[in-house]
Length: 362
Image (cartoon, rainbow, N blue to C red):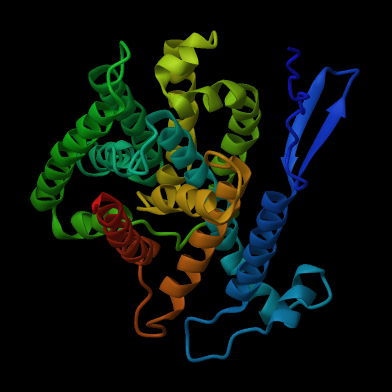
């Protein structure tokens, strides 16, 4: 009796997937066209919101229209409209770049921990940046420049503490998050002590900075974010293939030849750098790093957290929150942007809790 075996059919990628190859360089890039379209849509949305934000007014004087802002940006209009755009350009640029930077940081840590709560603001890194800035301003009296350096140092030291207590040696991802939450709680109490024991004027300035604030920035303040993205984005591109191996767990990554501990350290430095660059100049802006990667993962068909889409969503989220914070109570009050992002983050956490509870039901 002769048995026939079914012909082997090679697996095919979905039609939306395309491959870009450079044989001479030995490179092959898989591109999901649906994800690309969604990313482009968010980039265009960010540009539109950014232009509208440049024309928004915080006084009783009417703002500038969309077309008028474009004419200013192209050099066709000067005078008062040009001055208005120049005043808010650093804020909008920082919001766009900072939102992308925070989103990339969140995408890195959520991929490493395989947990939607693996975000630099949840696990205490931005709280540590706030601690460093408060020490510089209130204890050492170093002013705004010292606050920037203190925020960078505080963020890095907090990340090292959380890593060595929560992840070094291959410990569980949940332990990493729990340790981060514990460290964040202790730092929050210490921050409250610093503010409560400072004089009223310094305490008010420190409290405003600690809520996340993009006002009163200059173009020089955007340089750290530009430099950070220019340095860390290429580094992330190089290490991204190894990072993807962590999506199925540390053991799976190790079985595929990844030096897990060294890769974790490299990704830790890159992720902290992305978070610290924005936090150092604008204060701890909560929930952008938490929400943006998860939104990107839910709206794209790609497996895992898409990095480029996360950056685009983060930029849209922060620049939109900034214009809302600036105008929703104007001209009487301009809110810190952290107030708006925290409100959005609370809604997101409630949605996440309800979604998880539904999945847990039999």
